[in-house]
Image 1 (cartoon, rainbow, N blue to C red):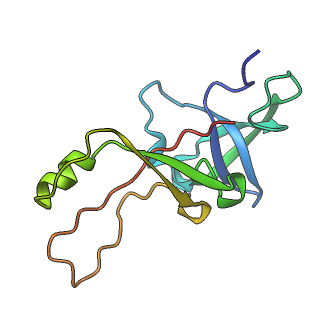
Image 2: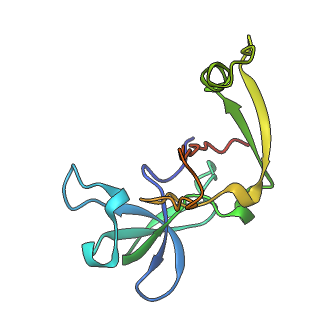
Length: 140
């Protein structure tokens, strides 16, 4: 069996509740990254454990309006993040060091689970900012 939802979002609804839901896209090309209270995105509320594959979790008929889109995972959702570094060769070359010959894995604390941001703050002292983000895929 598979999970109950096709698309998953975590958000604050206009009534103040933080929920998981399945978005109801107003158009096929709607960009979820542009979601604000003004876009009036609607979502069906998901009831139950989001990773459940037993059929106990349901996408309900309750429709709510999204006030603020959150990152898919809160730090409390994961004990630790296991990451795979695919850009080490590029970093090694820029630092003129010997590149790794294999893909490197690393751990990072759960506080690293943050929402996507349209613009990352850059310290004024930074001469060449290279903001980076990591896409996570939870596994059990």
